[in-house]
Length: 424
Image 1 (cartoon, one colour):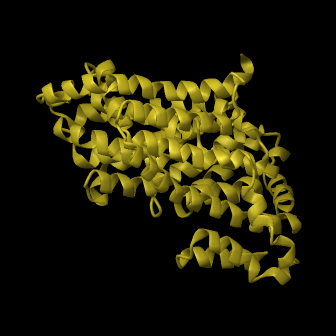
Image 2: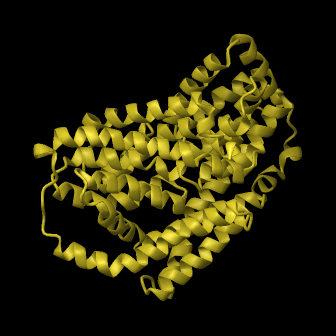
Image 3: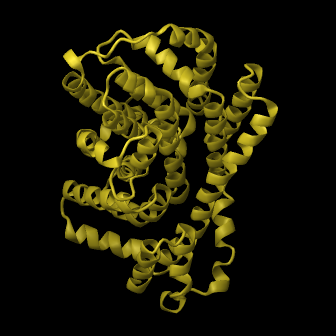
């Protein structure tokens, strides 16, 4: 098994596509793993033929439709009208709008790109340093995954066997905890970075007119999370059915409001195909590696090793956090969830850790990796969107990383934050 791990790491280091790296690490070492290649020929198809995984391309399509239909700007306008008079308001607007958009797209990187383009120039015009704006933008993108629906949680639930509906319910409070921790940082830093701690006043006549025109669009957009989450939690929809309903609703909204033409909707379908296909290809190839791990009883052996190494579940969780943070720094999010979820879940069960709670811990850790170099997708997207050098961002980045790690500690060691729905 050691050779397989070495091969996998080597392929990833030299830049082999992730899906190919997972498959080749097994194919080139099939004899040692006692894996017959003809026995795994159907695994890629079996791995992505799950009804639950159909939610992934559907939610990506929803995000693209609503983004290209002007959702981000509309949500920002409504958030600004709601809290615009608060001191340092636009930073809170960015956090709040990221949460709203995350409740629609389920994607952290998509949230960073959309909100950065909509709000970044406005924050810079109000006096915020460009590097600070990009750092807040990158950090707020975490809410794109922690506020349900969440593509990594769909992947985790379908591969490990945990109810996706329960995962969506469980992550609401942790998402709010993360948002509040980022807001606390902005509360402190905005008073230090802005003259007298106040945003620069600018001519808002154009903004107000745009806000009035987009108010109806924003209200329609805000109904999207109600449709998705209310339908799931009310027992009306499964997560996949909710994603399909959201697609129909989103297409109807953008066509009726004429924010997208039919040709634009068709173009959006094409754009959504690419990331969806990439994610599903990774899932299909990861199934080959997971089957090899199971046949060689690696998860079971790891569970025994971990329980012998750590007598205390608290120490086990600390070690898992450090491991997953490191993994998140070097691996793409969905691939990391696919690899580490099935591998570590048996160890967590051996320590009596609730599967839903552990899923939230895993996804939160790996998502923090999205804002931690070297493979910090959120940072790179925020830097490009806000036209700032990465080094300028790093002056402000540590504050938000620290807040995210503190929130992670609370989520890890206070299980009731994730299991709150069981007390109702």
